[in-house]
Amino acid sequence: ALEVRLASRPTGWPTEDNFEIAEVEVPTPGEGQVLVRNVVMSVDPYMRGRMNDVKSYVPPFQVGAPLEGGAVGEVVAVGTNVTSLAVGDNVLHGLGWRDYAVVPATHTVKVDPNVAPLSAYLGALGMTGLTAYAGLLATAEFKEGDAVFVSGAAGAVGQLVGQIARLKGASRVIGSAGSAEKVKYLVEELGFDAAFNYKDGPVAEQLAAAAPDGIDVYFDNVGGEHLEAAIENLNLNGRITMCGAISQYNESEKPSGPSNMIQILAKRLTLRGMLVGDHKALQPQFVAEVGAWIASGELKYSETVVEGGVRQAPSAFLGMLRGENTGKMLVQF
Ligand code: NDP
Image (cartoon, rainbow, N blue to C red; front, side, top):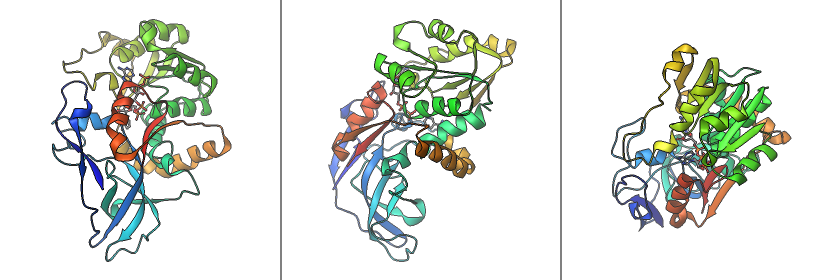
């Protein structure tokens, strides 16, 4: 069986050389454990942070050790004293980046392929979806009539933020993304009122043109110039969800901050950071509401699925950082 290990820590943009594909024995599950054959795994922006030797809200990956991350697979063997799972069950767990994972049964969540495709438990109905739902409704305290701007709008989280805002009665939904196709997708397929390609010109100007009455909520996936532009265009008492800052994850120099912070006080803005792990209590409400919108067709989600399992996982991850995905980037085994 194969697994992906961290070969070295990147400075700036990572490359294939930072990863090593290693051949390992298929492990045997011990007491309380199950052996899972992975079927689909997630590659996520936060994994870039874990490649650095920096203590954050998740510990760094270790050089020479396999990487970790969300995956869904099939239980193929069960250790002693496991009563909650049986061979053939599908489970969500945290040991992707390998063909086979041994996981404590208590660290898995059983998922049902008859309710949703297995990949959805890593995306729209999983961590990604909860990030969008909680970040908009709880962190930004979205209310009906708000004009919402989301960056990274054609990505996994962003595509859901915009649609949840629309379905909850936003007065206007605006998105930014990195290509003309993505902009078209947002407006024509997902029902955004306006969208622009941030590579076409200054973000502040493009946002002002797309939001003539300003914005009330900014959902930040990108940071940097986008954050400054949002502060510029926010209305009185506007709110910002600080969800991510992907424009800075591969910077080797210290990034510069927004130059217009004084507007935060003049406009009485609120900037609030969020971590999805703090919002587990919202999970049932999120699955019920978003699940129903998906079932009725009112909410759509796209996925970019890279075939080829472990061997293709590093390039899928690097491709996601470069914007090669529309919606959730996944690796199929
Ligand atoms: P995405 O599916 O959005 O993939 C990343 C996207 O980022 C790419 O597709 C690319 O799209 C965009 N991007 C890359 N570089 C830049 C840049 N310099 N400027 C603008 N956009 C860029 O990933 P996710 O939906 O999984 O994550 C989105 C954000 O949410 C990330 O910042 C992530 O860290 C954060 N996050 C935070 C969580 C939390 O708990 N706080 C949980 C989950 C995610 P494009 O073509 O448009 O450039």
